[in-house]
Image 1: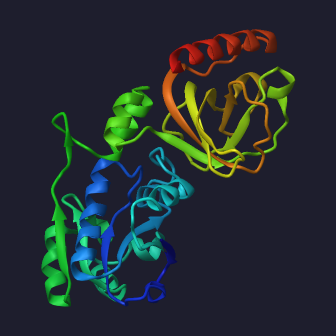
Image 2: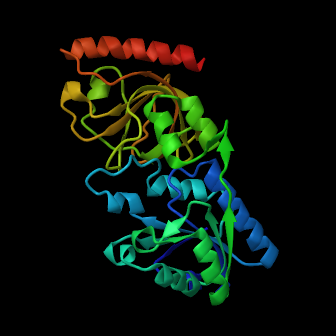
Length: 309
């Protein structure tokens, strides 16, 4: 899969393509239906299938003071999409120019990007102020020479699957429900940073990942499993316990994901790891002393071990 920025679809072998368009935050089961439909159309018409999305996400730009928690950062979306079979990921910068674009201008943009078929969800809206919807896009597309497939809602237990429903499940610590909505366990990934090594001094050496999000979709202490392809040997589902938050006892400030792997004594600095959240154990809290915090860390580790076993 190629990463295509702004207007680079000429990098693909064919100038025309099948586009599926949206924010795709979380890449949940509803998004997978859109992607699978684009892939099927691509095979049928012998065209590359491309996902068109935005950075930052539209709601992050439109609600800059209070953005919704982001489920997947760019690295996580890219890694997940690499396994879906798409030919390209095209990113448009969501900025004031794009926000002010009319519906008519946006469909013209789709055609300039080579769209022969466009796949969108039933609730797809675009253009200045969300003035245009999927039905209008389909009508305009016919005049411009491309077809529009509108995908109906995907439901689970009578509820429409959407990124907001996933966020609600994560915020409530309902990780099994979030996994059902996503079609996979919820995880975060990133490169392991070299920090102050306070955990090592306390007997809990951790692999730390900085959070590239304005707001976190969940926080607390978790039983986790860790995956790392770049490590030798590769890690596959290694059990551990993780803290996700601001580390108030040590005045941490910036959000950090700190993971302690059980029975593991190797260097992960610089490795890209994926931390899969299995169960939420408790809230993050501020302790009166480091000693009290370490006592609780031992209890957390024991609880996580028991759960994962």
